[in-house]
Length: 299
Length: 279
Image 1 (spheres, rainbow over the protein chains, first blue to last red):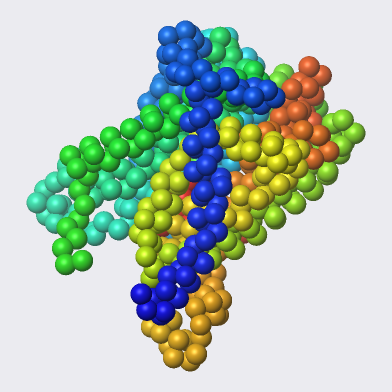
Image 2 (image 1 turned 180 degrees about the vertical axis):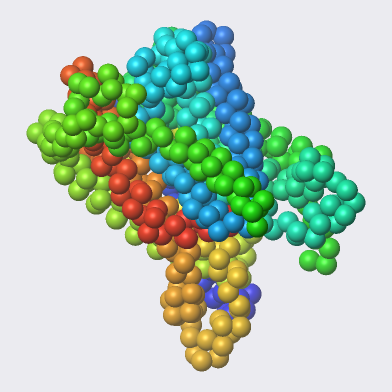
């Protein structure tokens, strides 16, 4: 190795060294430690006690609350993410016109995404769904009997799902950018051939947008799995009513920091890591059947 | 023109109406914070407070447990500034390495970074907590601020994308003029990526300002609480059901977020559209 190449390598590593150090200290070592703790009983105060696979056995066979949290999370993710993306796409298409007011509307629709993760909004959501809240008043105006959102586990979960759908704004912005990059000549050609709105949507918009949809689906799915703040605030840290809002992250938090079952919580974290990894891989692998990349020949 | 204007009106009534519907909860929250605390739910149907009162803001500002809300805001501002400086500077440094320098293993480390981008925080949360507890760093800002100085994968990715759009001829010209690698970074690249640095700073502000899980884990004494924890504490003291004060302080915590958004909208929108930053 010539001194010049050595110097080049050293400079490169000097620049990325903060990342490497941070990755080792705050990601890799903690992940490996977490794997070790997942095989132990550990309460932070006494030394970890080796349990083998007991935590995992207990989780899958002997903890109804665990399965409840899985069920709640699956409903939350698989109802919330598609609804949110569909909504984001619909609004993006409506806003994808030449009107000058689009910028203004775009900002308004983005606002919920911007503030959605805050405690203030979770408190607000808690109150608009209260027994005398404005959601029930609105339902009453359409003659629908009011719902006791905090009285029923499923209703409470839907309250969280609505909160997630309400924050469609950031996906909408990404879709808008994607829509803008579709050449208008495609639509003009389709119009000449007599295609209607729906045909243009299915044959041009969806295929052209599919890489963006794929990216959004992955990021939103992972984000949804990690949802914590709304469930924590809306249920006041309990996951209630009747564990109806006990999202996976919230149960993991309770196991770790309320009951001090650090080992059990680590095992839960590892299962989550594996599930998120598998889901990401599945979404990527299935992408070749529905994602249309423009040919990138000559790159 | 006439037939077009009907369509125009219809479009704006529908889209504008839907926007108001979407934002109605927020408007309701703001208006309710000016109502008398006992009447908030009785008068939930009417939006405009009657009479307008400032009491909620006065009461809320008194805070909880002897700490005024000003203390919580000060704590949060300190946390935000320390985090933002760390995340933005270190991410720019790292991004320059990935985008411009040739070295063995660059592809590997870039892939590692992209994987950490997708990693759920929950996986590292418990061991990180244990490590920080062993270091005796609990109930201090250190566990929250320290990791910020080692780069943030989202910002590194954003900045790498941005640096790649800058023509390499600039670097080469600088080398001919006798610049070393560090001065290329400092004198050429850094001034040119200001827009992307602005985007990263804004998101760093949002995420730190809103963060609840980190402060809940690491801060114990109320005098160190951030605004999100203070609101959470208001909520657990709800037995008094002083809704007015809680709403008022919720509005106070949202104001900086709105102000920053309307001042720097362009950076926010471009940041999300080009990099897919979650927001």
